[in-house]
Image (cartoon, rainbow, N blue to C red; front, side):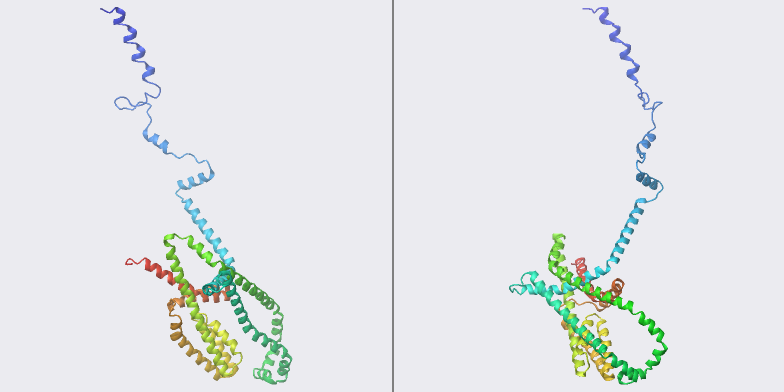
Length: 428
């Protein structure tokens, strides 16, 4: 069967202009700009470098803060680092200023912590006795606190009673002393004649009068100081009581914050440091009591007055490491030379020198044999640094406290450094 003319060459089916080369289908807007079949870019093709530059260009800053950081970054200025350093410096300055303003409170807290640390072994020992009524920590703390308070009152009475008695005796005999000074009789008149006190008083009468008028301000300052001392004692007493009551809970809470894998090691190091500090202070207390007993026996044998008072003075001041013996002995020797004569002063001096050697070579090794021994060089450096820092923080009282706490802190640091050194030893 032969197809007709319409089936063989239909113009619309074979070569329709729209199907073969329709300009709209071949080249849409933007398609002619691309590369051709040979890879050549069209006349409207975009440069790849310009496209990447437009893609990586930063967007314009929308806030002042962003504009400031962008401007600093363009100029090579590390603005973020500068602001961080400035903020750290301001925080350190404000923290140091706050610590300086709170230095008296911090000093009281440190003293209270030291006293609580010394009394805590007594509380624990009292609990371990197992007696009915003292097994609870609160009752044990109450018993120890009352005992410490009675001991403090006894010490204050021992120091204060002779002083008050001497002042009362002087005031009651003031008329007699004035009469002796005017007529040149008695020991007062002897001193006035020997040192020409009357002539000196006449020459310096205006200065003495002006000085007497200015005594009102020191007297007021002395009254304020006494009141502040009473307040400080009350604050220390309350802090010690609370630390003894809450010390075990605070210790347990602090251990809970430590990783369980290292908790046992930290507890062992803390116990070793506590034993070192407590043992050292207990041994120092025993040697100080021995020094007081030696002075008491010597002054009673020589017939010197105020022997118990001076013995108590030596026992308290000798508690200071390194320098306590000299500070305690010099006033006692001078008092013995003035009150009893040169011979008594020489005897006291010999007694102090002999006792110092016995304490350093016999008592200290025996009493402190079960404690952690601290290097003498470390003790000296700790005392010097503690006294200087304490004086900077709290004046004379701060220096005394710094000297007292220097050796326990040095012992604690020694224990911690030893443990860290042992742990980091490659051979262990």
